[in-house]
Length: 144
Image (cartoon, rainbow, N blue to C red; front, side, top):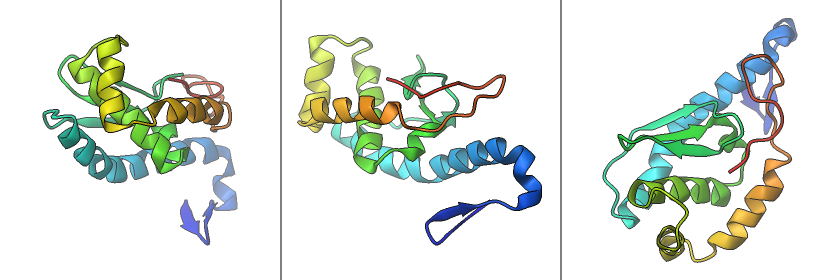
């Protein structure tokens, strides 16, 4: 699979494995790009350095572990950068505030004053992202 002229190109003889190859392509791009993207947000939130894992998460855009690792759905790579940032900030904020309390939303709002509009746009985008319908993977769109 290759990106050429703004389009993903897949050899015809690979058509039967296209969904898996596309997932792998998005995941690899996420592993390359997201760590550079999360760094400045982690600094702004005074978050310790985090491990970032790109993987399928069913209907969730992201999650964080008790050990401080961020899990980001590979489908996030289909979103505009401003919405990717919202997902990253949301998960980083959970490292300090584990639930969606008023303190959590104040923390998110401190670094993303427009988080409410981004959150609404993410809901709209969630209905449009591509996810494969194969066994063992999510069906439909990812969500928050």
